Amino acid sequence: MTDIDTGIRLINAARAAARHAHAPYSRFGVGAAVLLSDGAVISGANFENASYGLSLCAETVALATTSATGRLADVVAIGVIGGAMDAEGVARGVVPVGPCGRCRQVINEAAQMGKHDIVIWCGAAEGEAMTRHLLSDLLPHAFGPADLGIG
Image (cartoon, rainbow, N blue to C red; front, side, top):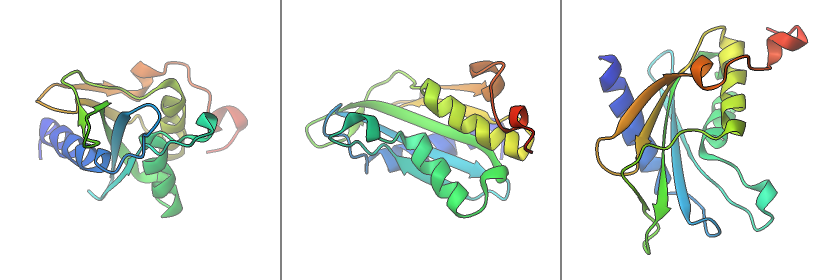
């Protein structure tokens, strides 16, 4: 499987996950898909809460699920999509969406625990627009477990 094929696979899985977004307040659905070293994919969708600060981003949901399986160090890539939700609750939009700053920090936890950079595929909710980044480019000089002497 080529690098682009991997990106397409993750973006498609993120789109599928976004269909389950619980975003009644922002009406912005986000899906994420985490690729593990053995090829397994774990996905998540954003989960909002009436107390806005308790809301969870899709990337955080997917990574927490990954951690719950004991596989946080096995994360090699993540795909993210998002867009304004239509009346049926489907994320729409043709511009790639990237992880917010908080999610970049959470992804960094997996990167440092696995001792490798993580590829981040940012995709549009619709269409073919997709960009590829390394976490280290999106979050240079990140603080993480290594700064605490862990890992």
